[in-house]
Image (cartoon, rainbow, N blue to C red; front, side, top):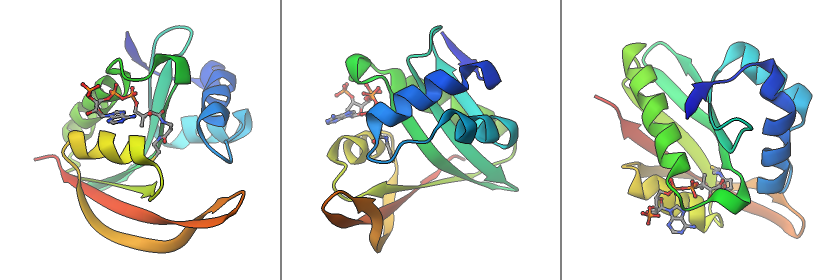
Length: 142
Ligand SMILES: CC(C)(COP(=O)(O)OP(=O)(O)OC[C@H]1O[C@@H](n2cnc3c(N)ncnc32)[C@H](O)[C@@H]1OP(=O)(O)O)[C@@H](O)C(=O)NCCC(=O)NCCS
């Protein structure tokens, strides 16, 4: 079941995020995003979530993360579908994102979801062994 999220979901969002990224966001970070951004999740308890900021006709995926044990079951696809429907209703026509160039799973997911590459930001993300670049992607919703 996909659903909107609220502050009670913040600790579980932080847990999934920390399991998914080199530098995860904590529950306080999540509570801040829950106040100002669009946040959709799946399941209760939460299996995964997406956070999207939007202004006027543009939006950006700030993060999307699925419980590592539940990947490749279509959960991220479901979350993106629900988010795109909501964004279109809000008048958003273009969705952007940044992804680390070594994140092959996410790049495959975004390509399979209709995003097109539009640019690159060198040395954008920190890693234990140095920095990696970010790729930027765009999807037209209309
Ligand atoms: C990227 C991520 C959100 C995908 O979530 P998911 O629920 O596993 O993705 P889905 O099951 O909805 O995948 C939909 C399609 O995307 C593609 N895809 C997703 N993960 C893939 C992978 N590891 N390898 C290749 N293709 C993949 C496939 O085309 C897949 O369809 P299929 O399973 O029928 O072949 C998940 O791997 C994740 O949480 N990663 C860690 C956090 C992260 O990197 N987020 C993105 C930051 S920009």
